[in-house]
Image (cartoon, rainbow, N blue to C red; front, top):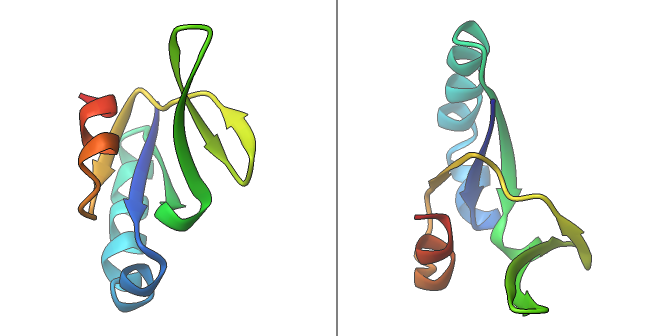
Length: 79
């Protein structure tokens, strides 16, 4: 199962160990935890549906997310 871990870039650098630890533990549980940077994500609506894009390309949202930043719209979209 794919899970996003979402951080601001500066915070991701500070918490590199924490992120890698979660990724390693996730692997043992059959989870793929991908780091996503807020600076590369956009949220929008297309044809009445919520979309998320990364680096201007629409991406499929994950089944779950660990949101380690303050971005209320993203938190709401992932609930």
